[in-house]
Length: 197
View 1 (cartoon, one colour):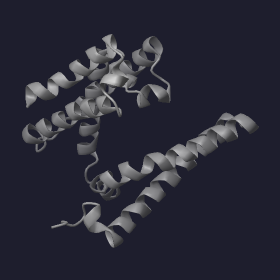
View 2 (cartoon, rainbow, N blue to C red):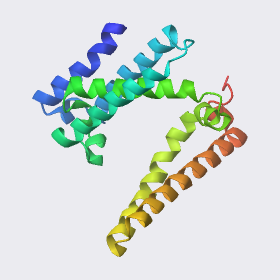
View 3 (cartoon, rainbow, N blue to C red):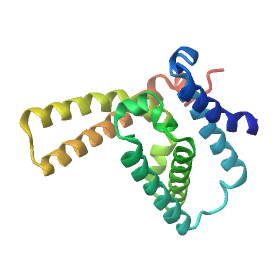
View 4 (cartoon, rainbow, N blue to C red):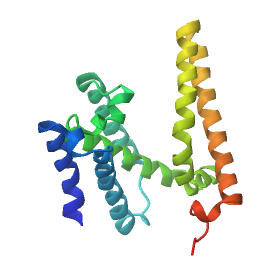
């Protein structure tokens, strides 16, 4: 299992680099293959390290590595566009760099989550993250379109742009939390809150 999961990003990288990969891997399955690699890393982490407390310097070091990786990715590989993520290029522009950046960011988030794990509101978001992940993106996409239209048509100040983006994110969180409540109340068996059997 380790060998298979570690091989997936390498296979996807070479297919993407040397072939017409959309015809070989349809339906954006390449993203699923990349996700499998990260899911497996998470499973390995849970088996070995989940009960151990991460020191704060782990968060600082991995956070710095992540920020450097993001800086290099954006400035030297032009990975800032949203279409790069949709097409899977956000992971495949430079395989070692993208994996080091991604894994260091994940470790930084793990460390941060252990530091703030007694904050109940954040714990609630974590426990309901599957539903939140499912519903937040299409909702936030529509709000982002509205923000971009507002920026283009009215050319607001930087302060108003920041306010509009923060309001979009706040609305997304509220909408996602409302969906969690509705799923728990009305369709718990179809959203994983109760066993379907």
